[in-house]
Length: 266
Picture (tube, rainbow, N blue to C red):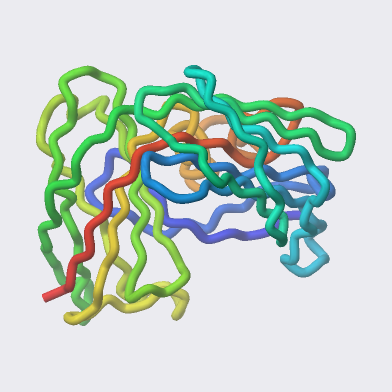
């Protein structure tokens, strides 16, 4: 059985576009799903632990309670997270710092899961530049994130776009393999409701929030695999994006920096 997900992803392209991603997850029902994030911003960090469900069931993922969740870094900082409900475990005093390597350990249902992620140095998001073009009788808007890629090769970025504080997020990923050490040239495409009403049509006056994350290679690979699945590249399509969490867990653990700007469409 297959289930269709919708996500917006782009890599080395001028604008993002929506893909229908068919993930063959027949044997994944009941697997543990771990989603963990550590950033360089202040505040608590969350690790969410749930179970995957069968495709004939509603998208209500059972929370995993009673887990032991420990977050640490390579300087000796460590904290056991507190369960706050709905499968979420939160820190109280842990602080993410760029350049450090973070380890997540989860003991749940008698199994141990571990993951590591190194937080890259932050790249500053200096501004957003609007452009537009016509698609039929509609205007499609784009935003160019203004930043300069560092001189060293290997920087990876994730862009999360929200519109007017709506819950839906549009995700794009970008590598510096073709633009290393140069000002950014890749624009973020904004939806124009050309996909059977599933997207908001961006119009003048809309507020667009762009979050730029500097991510490590494992997380870039995770999101790039979703793009690969959606486009059907290659002869073998993975059933799930490659997780950086051990012992067969689904999901990801990401230590990343965050820079955000809000832009009003003119």
